Length: 640
Image (cartoon, rainbow, N blue to C red):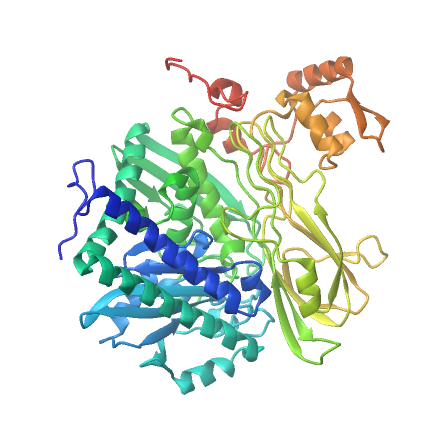
């Protein structure tokens, strides 16, 4: 069947508008239902509580049609490469075939993200593919949780699977099951994920074929195409509104710990707009790191789509219409297009968030004079925090995978959200302490906001989060993160967000900063751990923030009195802390703010709480954008 191309002059909908809307939303609902099945059937809290899973529908040639609303942005953008590789590798599909696959170089993210793919047949031929992905807490390798900060080859990172037939005629292929179980930790738990993902694919098949029976095969095929055309049409309409030209931005990873001098890692993009054509060129990025920080091209594509969708949220769910409208240029052997065997388990903690940040910053430059509500500073960086060992109460092996939510970037008109993981995982949930304590030998003493962690500005970034816990039994700890020495960039004079932090035995004589690249640290029974996440980057000048907003953050114990005075220029008197009676000293505040405005000697750089030079240079402040009061006003040169 010939595919219609969606442009400004694309043909009308193949189906009538009502059928189009019903089916476009039906595809999303199918994926939502299958995702809910995974959540209920799986074992790992990473999946059942943290929602680290995704389900999608793709065409027979591997074009993305839809995904679930709680599914994860880092997953979905790799699904096309995954299914297209599967189609190239498998000579012939049969009903009841189901494949397992996690190779990051040909179709993916990192080894922990395991896909189970089901071809859906109708009329004797493949009609669609269902793909269900879960982040397995462990897929083998020398480290609990598979993450290996010091790996220099993928062979030190765990089991890597090409497309393998997991089921044949809907019967488990025992040798493949045995191969997996013999190479991963806690295999009895991973059986639950395999069944959950398998049943999710069967559910997608039943629901999709039910619509085929009701509407007819051609109507559903046309609905696939209409859904993609619709998204591309919306996207290109937006792009045509933006000024033609090129927009560039650069961000940095903390360091390549695989090299002796441990240099920072540059991520650079140039976004070019010509009419409704978009090209994003990543060839200016640094060479591939030695250690596990970079990723392969499918992951680059996913991160680029994610940063784009963050600026154009009405395009959700992501599908091939957006994919084909963006030309992504990369160079093999760079940190965003690594080649085998460069290690890649870092994924979201490394290159992914930097590509996201740079993509949003490039789009933001084009958008700021057209619709500044779509401009975002940078966000929290993922931290992969894994513990493992033998549970002292049960005597059984365990592996735990945890991350911390954190601060989102400030917008040009509003503060960033706190305690979220929006960019990575739109539907992510905090893994409850109570659940983690039942599964793993650790007792949580506090979970609270990380005071003063926000990037500062007229609109501040969101605040990070800290979890503190006591260790109940000897445990090995592996952490692979970033953004410890390079903060999430602030914009328009706002400061960078605060750092990710990991400390063993804080406040004790034996206090030790473990940092974001920890390998096989031994936690002894009785040790205490302090683990805190980034705040988001700020937007605009801090001393132009409304004093009442600063006061509110102080009362909420998110901001210290010292930072309110020194950074925001707001003097606050504590009349009665127990009664929450705090008052602004207006005269002293006016004096402090005049002094800060007259002598802006804040350090410029990429470190936490410094002013990012590019962010300051390339972005207009809220007063210039007309966003100071929250709702955008008339922009310079525009009619009110």
